[in-house]
Each structure stands twice: as structure tokens, then as C-alpha cells.
Length: 161
Image 1 (cartoon, one colour):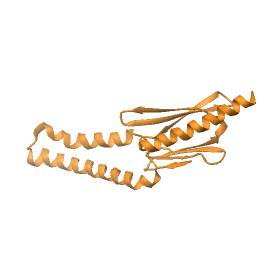
Image 2 (cartoon, one colour):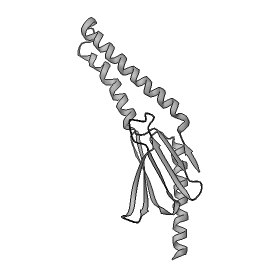
Image 3 (tube, one colour):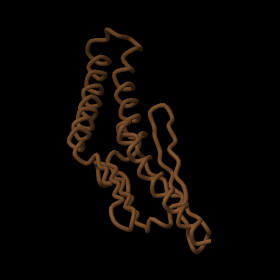
């Protein structure tokens, strides 16, 4: 199964550009308010604070582009930001039989996928992916696919014992 929200990157770029324009316009309006008009008073600080809060929420949600591929004998996870220099992109590929467990954490507007895989060195390793920008249907499809892989792994372990 393949899952990707790469086709929405133009929307995320637009939102990012819009937020930058809001910040610039807010700074300009604040400066005009403080040094020329002086109508709002102390509330003029909101012209700067609100756009920065919106930008912070946009980036605290994490990496915007998530790709998952379970075709073949390996699982591929890719997670990257629309602005390449902002965050290092994550790219992991491992055989399906190494998948032990997964968990989706859903906090207000942030969603994370934690994947536990078996490792020779430490026994198991946990990988973290940011899936805040996936739709509910995409998250359910991802859960279904990962559950199917785990179920197949458990059946193979029972047969091999």
C-alpha cells in the first residue's frame, strides 16, 4: 500500500507564504500604528503576536510531507518539511519482518506515529514520524496496513516456534 500527501505540498507552500506575508504586514501595521496613527494603543502588539503564533502552530505540527510504502518486502517511511533547510528529512527503510509495534499519538493538533522495530544491537528501536497533516482516512489506512504487517509477522513467529 502506498500513502502520500506529497500532492498537497503546493497548499502547504501557499499557507507558508501567506503566513510570511501576514508577519510582514503585521510588522508594517505595528510600526505605522506606533509611529504615525496611535489609534489602538497597547493592543497594537497583537498585530505582530498573532501572525507569529499562527506561524509557530504551523511549524510545531511538524514535517508536512509524509510518504509510506509497504509494497514488496520492505517498509518505506519518508517525512520531510516543505522548506528543505528547516528540518532534516527522515527516510527509513527496513524489512517488514522487523516491525514489532506501532502507536499513533493524537494531541490537540499534533499527531505522531511511533514505530518499534527489532534491532540486533539494542533489541528494539523506536522511530518517530510526524503525521499531523494526514487526513483521518489516510491515518486509518496507515493503521490498517501496519496492523496487517504486524499480524502477518505474529503468524510467522507462531509457525516458526
